[in-house]
Amino acid sequence: MEPAFLLEVSRPEQTMLCGEIMGKLIPRGSVVGLTGDLGAGKTVFAKGLARGLGIEEEPNSPTFVIMSCYEGSVPLFHFDVYRLSGGAEFEDTGYEEFFYGDGISVVEWADKVRDVLPGNAVIIDIQFPPQGDEESRTIKVAGKEKWLLSFRNTAEQALLASKK
Image (cartoon, rainbow, N blue to C red; front, side, top):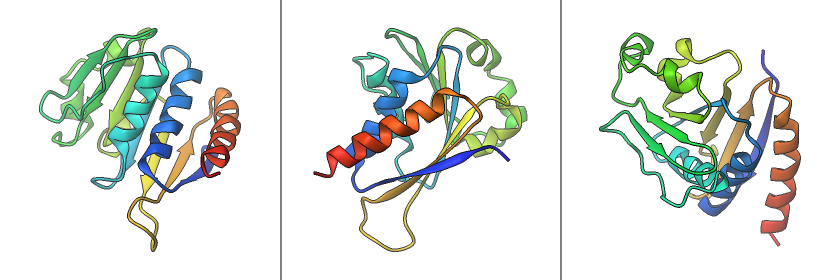
């Protein structure tokens, strides 16, 4: 089982902040899988990650095109596999070119294609709390990458500061 930690956010701006911090720390060639229910904040996290990579264009959920590319300090390949039936169908998209290239790949609805994600992929699971306000979320971050410790520390400090 991969090491994991939780981040608690109380509004979408904090979800975006977590993504932005990840974008500033994530190394080239990384793959991030985003999971969670519809409306949980996967695209909000991806927008923050893009901001952290210095991308000026705001990513939208590319549901009808499977993948959108955004140029910044590092290219961002934003996949949305909601409409795919699984990993076999995803293989037809040629995703390997992007996963094993020099950019950052973000996959929304990654649980649908988990069988084709690289072993070093970081999985971000965004969940609504069992009870609470409509904007609160629990963000579970799982992965083996060493840079995730720096991400955790920076994100926790930033979230504390944003609550003041």
